[in-house]
Image 1: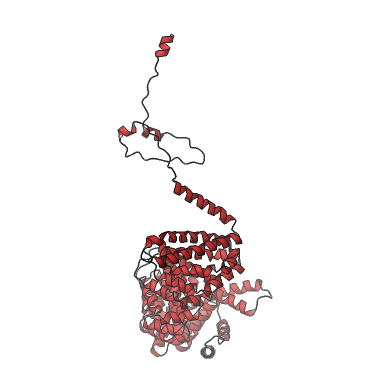
Image 2: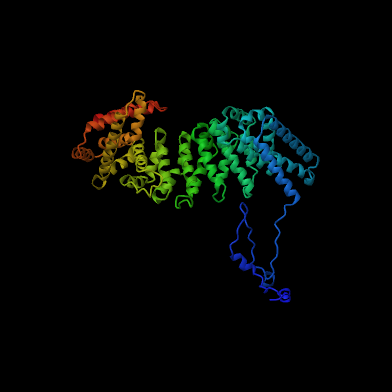
Length: 557
C-alpha cells in the first residue's frame, strides 16, 4: 500500500451499540460507589440509537448546607461537655421564647411565626445529643431545662409536642437510665415534680392516630411511662391518678382496628394493675371491668388473627385476673356476666380457653368467690368444667399452657366450688363423682398418683441438694411449685367426696389405693401439712374455719 492509499484509507464504520445491549454487558464498578440504573423501557427506538451522557444529580446549595450542618452536629455530639450543653440549652430557651413572642404577636398570621417554629423544632432535635451523655442529666436539670421542655407538650402545634415526646422517650430509655443511675434519679425527680404523666395524658387526648407521626407520638408517650415505672414502681399510682388509666380504657373501648398502640395500651394497663391495689379499685370505679369483658368478648368465637393480637388478648385476661384481687370487682364481674362469657369461651374451644380458665380460677377462689361459685353451678358450668377435668386437652389445643398448669386451674376451680357451695349446688357437684361408674373418682385417683410421684422426685432432689442456707419456707415453696399444691387440692376434693358424697365413692377410693400400693396415711400427712399452713393470710378467720373443717374431714376419712 503506497502513501496515497494510506492517506485515503478510512476504517469501517461500526454501528453504534444499542443502549439495551449495553445493559446486558457486565460493567466494572468503582470501589465504594454504586452504579445507578436508568430505566429504558419507555424510550423510543430513535432515542436509543444515540448514546447520551447522563450527568450525576447535582446537590443544590441549600441541601449542601443542610448536609454540612448535620455533619457538624454529629462532630459536636461526640464531644458534648458541660459547657456545650449549657450553650445548647441557652439556644433552646431563646428559640422557645422567640416562638412564644411571635405567636402572641401574630396569632392569626402563621406565616409570621412559622420560621421560628421550624427553628424551635430544630433546637429540639439538637437536644437528642443529651441522651448520649446521661452523666450530664444533672447539669440539664440545674439549667431548668425540664420545665421548659415539658411546657412544650401543650404547644399548639402537635409537631412540636410530638418532637418533645420523642426526645423524652430517648432521655428515659431504660438502658440509658441504667448507665448513670444517680443522674437518672435526678432527671426522674425533675420529671415527676412537673407532673409529667398528667402533661403526657393531656397531649395524648389531642393526638390523631390516623397520622403516622402522631401515632408514633402515642407509642412513645406510653414508652415513657413504661420506662419510668420500671425504675420507680410508685409511678404506676401517680400515672393512673393523673388520668392515664382513664385514657387507656377509652383507647381500648374505641371501635378501631387492632394496631400496635392498642397492644401497647394493654401492656401498660397490665403493668398499672399488677402491683397497685389502688389502681384495681380505680379500674372498677370507672367501669373498667365491663370494658375489659367487652374487648374479650370479641374472641369468644374467633381466634386472634395475628400473634400480636393474641398477645393483646392474653394481656387483657391478665388485667381481669389482677382486677379480681380487689373484692368489690368480683361483684362487678358477676353483674357484668363475666361468668357466662368465660363459660362460653371454655365450650367454644378457641385460643381464649386458657385465659378463661385463669380468670375463672381467680373469680371463684377464696371466701369472696362464694357468690360466683354458686352462680357458676346455676349457669350449668359443671357441664363445661368436668369434661375438661376428665381429659387434659392435647398441647396444640392448650397452646401457651402446660398440662400441669391446665390441671391446676381445673382442680382449683372444683375445689373452690366444694368449699363455697351449699345446698343443692353442692349436692350436684358431689353427684358428679358417682356418674358413669365413678369415672370422675377414678380420674381423681389418677391425678393423686401422678402428682404424688412428682412430689417424691422433688423431695429426693431437695434432699440431695440440701443446704443450711435454705429455710423451711423456701423448701415448702419449692415443693408447692413441684406439684404439692395440686396434690393438696386433689386430696381435699377426694376427702370432701368421701365424707359428703355417696358411700360408694369412699369404697372406690380405698379400693384404688389398695390396688396401686397407696395408703390412707400418706393422704392424711399431705392434708395435715395443708391445714398447718392455713390461717396466716389476710382472711385469717375464714382460713381458721377452713383449717378446722379439714381436720374434721381427716377424722372422718
